Length: 441
Image 1 (tube, rainbow, N blue to C red):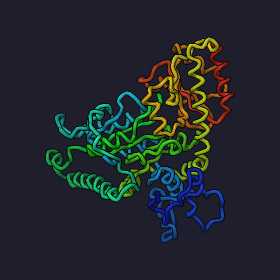
Image 2 (cartoon, rainbow, N blue to C red):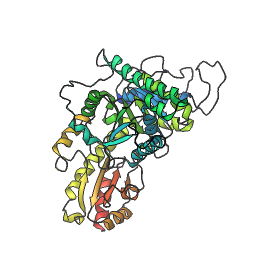
Image 3 (tube, rainbow, N blue to C red):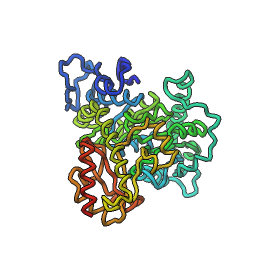
Image 4 (cartoon, rainbow, N blue to C red):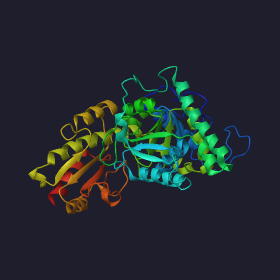
């Protein structure tokens, strides 16, 4: 996908080549092979790159957004963290209805959504029909999508631009009405606010259970009810899953995780299907100051160069390790401490529907995350002390393997659950590490 601030369309390369060369048109006048790290916050007026102030635009940020936009097939904006990018989508759409899995997924996304509702409702009357509703995603399954033959995807048909433009224009008009209503009374303001703005928020694979959600199915539902679809694809990355190609309007990443991949940067990203949405979000980002810093932009660009080889190997390791854990259930050799394994690749431990969706939506690969449950809370907390190759820490997606006790921060999780982020170590060493740790319980 062509980036809006790039002069030429990126060449049609495969994923790894795109990671390395999608930004090759930038800074061609320099002889550096590695991207230059720019630290300046301000620029001389009239420079050839059109830069003025780094909060608005900066060369390294341009480059990393070009690469990530091309990897996802859309238009990218980077942010100071994953949650700041979640908040940017919410504030841009200003939904009055949000569909999400209420007791599943990353608690931080839920916190952003509930804080948004709290803020909106603080200036609405209690009985207002415009209050924000947060509804469980399962309610949408009542909607018949049999009449929707395909989702609207950029590049698929001639009607796509009209559909996207109409959706974005409706949003812009509603924003303008809200802006004009600032000097009106509360009662008058309510008349100007559209009653329904709907957002379907999907997280797939789900944190920490790795449950998958059918993006194409919910994109069809969105077409029926006139909703936006945003997908948190942090666990998958563009290597394993392409939400825009399945009908989503926005893809969100916590770049701190797999895209960064080295436990050394904090970043988020939104990739838009529509260039107009990109323009409005970019303007809003400049105002709020949620842009990515100069150093973080360079670190992220460095990491994207090796994204496919990293994630492909991590995902391969995770599938093999998940199968090994599955064999440890009721296995006397490791003292029968493993009671459950959560990973969509396990045909025997997951539903047929999940297994088939894994093959269809993720190409039968990854994710590089899995979760296990042990027989007791005591053993879940004890086994991590015996591990040598897994760091006992939160976060995920790094080149080194991590193990996290999720109940510390998310009480919706089982207190016997451990989430494993699989790194680039030898999978044989990882298996032996768990084998020796389990035997010590």
